[in-house]
Length: 278
Image (tube, rainbow, N blue to C red; front, side, top):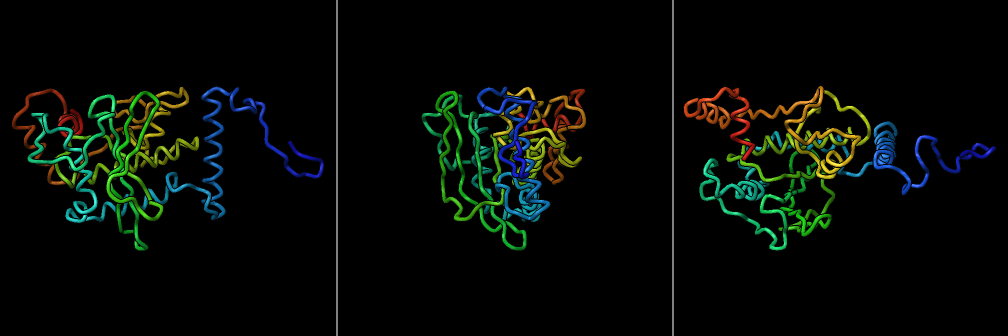
């Protein structure tokens, strides 16, 4: 509504109710999309700091670049515990070679849904040159009952605002180089989520299937507005699961599968199943 003086008192729309409690989930999410886009537009076009760090595409993209430049030793320093924590979920799986891996952080006794019903998070901060400067300790996210979610910080929390936060469900990845590449892939999926959360189609490089931001995974599951982008097998035109590690570990996995398996599935699908599915 606008006064005769031209001053805007408030905004209204004929397409959805003004009162949030009267809106459908789709109408409410559409409003949130508009708000996210407004913050994004003001930040990118006018230079104001209106974006929260968790939805800042440029910062997440910079972290992807920073992770890609890490050596294996540096990756072990920053993400060794996260790697071990993830792989420890497969110690009893005879198809996954976990070696003598130990679990750095015990799972909460009050957690429901089984050992795999957990999400791990880790904060990342870059230096002025775009290199990974520091990482926080592992954050364990779990439910004690439906709708009752908890997060416990293990190890130190960052003293500064992170540039990005990786979010990881346990995956049977057995080498650090592949694990690091997978973290980058999940961050690219987070960038996808940022665009979709503003009602925008992501650029081609981010039209991916796979897990990104947990908060958007919940939206994809429960809101009719969205397809299930988190599902690597989802049939969404223009989107695909294209994680294909480019390391020596991948070559070894291919060689092993070719020697020991007889199946009509493609080598790519077999390696994907071996590395990323239980």
